Image 1: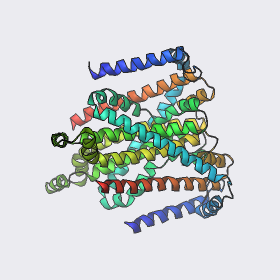
Image 2: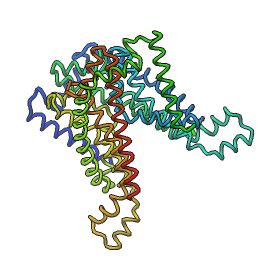
Image 3: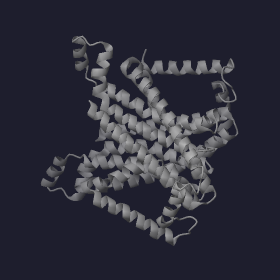
Image 4: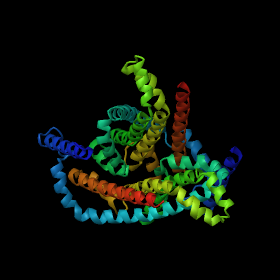
Length: 245
Length: 244
C-alpha cells in the first residue's frame, strides 16, 4: 500500500511543480519555491511573531475542546440515561445540525468580539455535537440484560456505570471524541480566517492580503501539518483507550 | 404529553425566558435583542435578505449538483476497485477532514470574487461526504449478489443498474443529505470571506454594523430554510427507499 501511495504523493508534487511554473508566479507557487519559504517561516524570518500566533491558536483549540468534551459528555449522558428527556431534546439538537454551522459565526463575532472568545465559541459549537451524538449512540448499545445482571449481583449505580455502561460504549465514545476534536480544530481555524486579530488564521489572511503567496502556501502547509498531527495523536489515544477495555 | 408538544413547549418557554431577560435588562439588548425585537427586524430585513438568500441557494444548488454527480460517479468507479479504494482512502479521508478554508484565499486569488469561487468551494465541501459514502456503499455490496447476477448472465451495465445502484441508494441518500448542508456551508463561507453577494455577506455585514436584531433575524431565516431543505430530502429518501 505504501509504494502506490508514495507514488501518488510524488505525482501530485511533480504535477504541481510543472503546472505552477507555467502560471503567473504571483498566483502559482511551485514546491521548489515553497520549501525555501517554509524554511524561512520555520526559522522565524518571515513572521518573527509566529510562535505567539501559533500558541494562541493551540490555546483556543485546547479551551474549545475541553468545553466541548465537558458539555458534550454531560448533555449526552443526561439525554441518553433519561430516555424521556432524550426523546424530546435529541431531535431538536438534530434539527440544529441541519444548519450549516458557519451561519452562527457572525452572531458569535457580535457577541464575543474579534478576539479569542469567538473562535473558542465556534470551535466548541462544532466540536460538541459529534460528542453528544456518540454518547447517545453509545448508551443505546449498552445491553439491558448486562445492566440487569450486574444490578442483580448487587452492583450500585456507580459500579454499573464504570464496569458495564462505559466499557460497552467505549468504541463509539472514543470515535465521537476524536471527531469532536477534528471539528473543534476546523472551527477555530475557520473562525480565525473569517475574522481575527491574531492566530494562524490571521497570519494566513495577512500573507494573502499582501500577496506574499509563497509565505501564504508555507503557512497553509504548516497549519495542515499541525491539523494532521493533532488527528494522528487522537488516533493513537483512541487505540490506547480501546486496548484498555 | 407527546414529544412534539413538549418540544414546542420547551422552545416557547425558552423564548419567554429570553424575552423576559431582555426586557428586565439582564442581557444587553445591543447584543442579545429580545425575540419580539428579532421578529420585528425580520420584517425589515426580508426585502434585502430574500434576494440574497435566493442567490445563495441558487449557487449552492449548482455546487450541490456538481458535488453529487462527481461524488456518485467517482464513488462508483473507486468503490468497485477495492485496491484503488484502499490506496486512495487516506488521501480522501484527509481531504474530507482538513479545514478547506486554508485554500480559500488562493481560490479567491485565482477566480476573483464572483459566483465561480462560491460554486467551486461549495462543490469542494459537498463532494467528499458524497464520495466517501458512495465508495463505502459500493464496497459493501454483497459479493454473492454479483456472483449470482453474473451466473445468470448479467452484463456489466446490468450489474450496475440492477444490483449495485439499487444497493447503494441508502449511501447515496445519506451523502446527499450531508452534501446539501456542506455545499450551502461552502457557499456561505465564500460570501462571508470575500464579500461575494449573498446571504453570507449579508450576515457578515449585519454583524460588522452591530445590527443584532437584523443579524438574528437573518440567521433565523437561513437556518429555517436549511432545516426545511434537509427535511424535504429526508421525505424524498423515505419514498425512494420504499421504491427500492
